[in-house]
Amino acid sequence: MSGNSDPLTPRAKLAVTAGKAAAAVSRAAGRGSGSVIGGRVALKLDPDLLARLATHLDVILVSATNGKTTTTRLIAEALRAAGPVVSNALGANMPAGITSALAGGSDAKYAVIEVDEKYLAGVARDTDPKCIALLNLSRDQLDRAAETRMMAEHWREGLAGSKAVVVANADDPLVVWAASSSPNVMWVAAGQMWKDDAWSCPSCGGVMQRPGDDWFCGECGFRRPTPTWALSGDHVLDPHGSAWPIHLQLPGRANKANAASSAAVAAVFGVPPQVALERMYQVQAVAGRYDVVQFMQRDLRLLLAKNPAGWLETFSLIDPPPTPVILSVNARGADGTDTSWLWDVDYTRLTGHPIFVLGDRKLDLAVRLEVANQHFQVCENLDQAVQMAPPGRIEVIANYTAFQDLRRRVGN
Image (cartoon, rainbow, N blue to C red; front, side):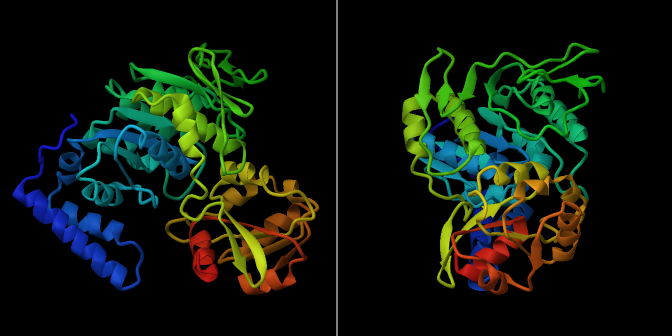
């Protein structure tokens, strides 16, 4: 339902105004962007506001454990070729933050919205999306999020019968199980580096067989669907078999996979792969991720990794040894307070790198690195770590709140 007729009631307009005022007060007080508090205030005044704000938009939802902020940004860039876009670009991905984002998009045609996994079904119900991108599911925030199979089941039930085109990763069995309840699915071979959450069949609990890139359950027959889009090296293969080069300023295989899924989403709205991929080149960093900053006369590259799958992908893109690496881990509310996931990360991949450890849970991380036979030094803060690091660019890998702490310290 695109068009510019005003869908907002007087109550909704009041809610939007009050939300923007609350956000402005929050920003003035130095408490961040204010998008979450603004959205909360607005939804308190009009609980149906999210649905009202979405009525004139073609909504695209993006959900995953890893890569959703970056993919949201890539899709938004691609769709700007077809019209104005509103997006929650800073990653406030629960209903309050999403409401704030849409409140600023009265002139937009498209809304490209990152959604926290736990809230996907509810946000889809409220916003009637035209397209939903599902990238991956893995263990994350163990104290808050459900076990991964339960999350896949939650998605499957919430998306059953959805009218949206679901663009889903054919290489993640949990995503395939979740998306299979939808009547209109476009499968993308985007790859899956982390497989430790998908060794049992989400359909029957049997053991998954994984010959090469294929996968199937030997007990119930649940298997990898045939993709129509695929990541192939540095190219995206479209449904006609044409290969389109990927040119990104963002590093790593995972971002090429994100670009492949984003190109498939853009095609749903008539943006050709060549145009979509060319526009994605403009993205240099995403909410600080991948930024190279100068701090204490040193170059630091800031990398976000918040769960085992994310750390595995990040280790694959850092510069080789003897590049120094700083690791920072917190366990605050936004991170999840359970740090047992540290034991699922293969830290032997850092062998040969000088490692410096900081953050609220630096000692938890130190124990894990000790067991992995890594050489490391525990530091009190970023300044000390940078002073101790040998010459060369420093790779800085941090989980969510640790990453925000570091960005503030380096003035990013």
